[in-house]
Image (tube, rainbow, N blue to C red; front, side, top):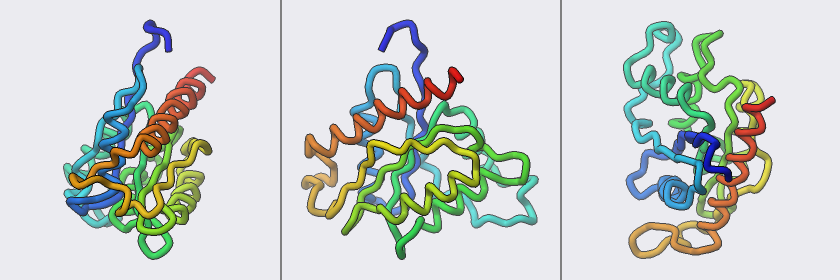
Length: 189
């Protein structure tokens, strides 16, 4: 990448509240392996977002305003999601609902987004498919390839709970390289 191009800012959201979350570990990998010109920042306040309530969507709580501001300020998004009951975790869907509302104030509109996941079996493939459906409705631009699906993830972290496997780290780096290209392409259209 040329030194004269501005960096792109990627907001990474892990769709889990669990302290030892494998998807939070994937976000940490993304921060560590981001290519030059890509700055990955983690949104760590997912647990502070209350349940969506349409009665207050036009005057949302501070945690929601902070999420919407961070999404709006980002050039692109990176979602790391586990899979719960063959779909999106409720905490992640709740945050998406808040940040895309009220009607006419969708913070996600026209945003490039990449998805990755780590899970006990297939690495969250069904959750990723569910997210893609939501992203179509929100007018987001989901990156199709490469896919990052860390299957049998509990067996692939080291003793400290981190993904040190070079293949996993490289797949996350390749995803960020592709997201960088995708984001710059969309900005220049």
